[in-house]
Length: 411
Image 1 (tube, rainbow, N blue to C red):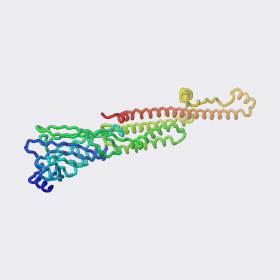
Image 2 (image 1 turned 60 degrees about the vertical axis):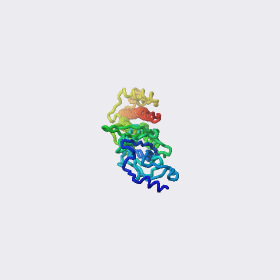
Image 3 (image 1 turned 60 degrees about the horizontal axis):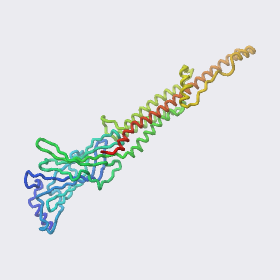
Image 4 (image 1 turned 30 degrees about the vertical axis):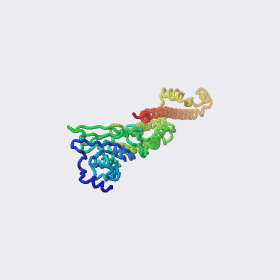
């Protein structure tokens, strides 16, 4: 019976001609989209790869029959290559495969209704906004429409305003927050061309980038703060700062491989890395200055000004909760007593005077050296708190807008 039905249906059937009774009749195609997998979202090349099913249904007036004449057969499956098909394609495809679908069989019912649900794999163009990377959301769209038929010949009607996600396979990096469809049309002279646009609102799952990118960057920024906790006579202060700067450069190169090259926006993580790099560079400059202060003495022609003594040896240590620097007086003994002893010991006068001057000079130099070292400690403590405050404040200011956007509910 089915053989006879197929022979009778396709006798004289022309698949290149629209199946209508009159030339000005319009074929209405009911269109729907079912997504099975979000394969990839390529930020670098601005592509979205999806596996979908295209649900299409229309009436072919040339493929009707009476089920009673063919043993109660109400539907048959026929190769889609043998019937007329609406040439619906993805407009924003990025790989040159506009059709993108597998030519599966179509279901033909006795009243001429044809249902064709081919699977397809598409690479569609998507403009990426990486401002809040890796806490970003993307709005990617897929626009479907007939390639050659205008709206008077083939019209599109949405089956559902939402993409079917019942059989969706979860993606490890992205979550689909919303997927809706809307019908539109464009004019070209006297003709109008209908199309259906599906918008996918995607939210990145940032756990991977948080663990392996953001947290290490936070750690490096606080390592910079610890530079000022190292003693100034240790040579590792500059080595630590330089190592942090090199590590940040490596992270910056990693991000450059991920995000698209664009001068329109700077990604959030890029801003943060740039902030830390400036932060570290400034810390290196400050560290050089502190080490220079640490090694000053009267022998290097750096006498200490009175205001420096007052500010760094008395006032600031109290504000920073540091143990006060004790001013040392001249080496024991009074000049009058020395003179008395010198008067009594005439033979040793010259020797004692020489020894006294030498000891006083050494004592003075030692005091100056200790004073400059204490000034360096005070400077280290000042910059420790200043850099810690700037690091925490900068981190909060940079990441707060991104977290607010990430936690907000899409409209």
